[in-house]
Image (tube, rainbow, N blue to C red; front, top):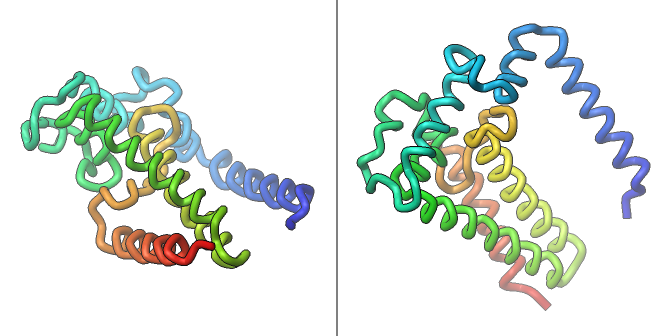
Length: 184
């Protein structure tokens, strides 16, 4: 029931605030735009993304095998957390990438189904919000790893290393399951 005008104003204010935080600092501008010209920034700001692209390319269709990827041995910094998708792509190849994307797509589709079938508005908002959260977070993480978006430092839900991220994701999944269990 929120008016579109209110959402547009809030979104515009958030965009303006983000731009005001990034644009004044040359360092932040370079970090934010390094993915646009990766070959020029691969030695400094774009190193992590460039190395992840090499790992993804090494994976091919079927991957190099579980535990056989070289990216995690220091070539891709933070390979166990923010850039785990690159290691999955290297070790499991296109098959693993399609499986991970399929699981997130399934989670989003089932979450939308739970939101639409919720008994009350509160349950629908919980299910819809959690579903959007998981979908957007996965989209942003994978976009950063594949050099289609700036790197933000968001984890890949349920997969990236990190106790607090996993704990909160599991709690949110429990709420989503509760809404789905009590559908009308």
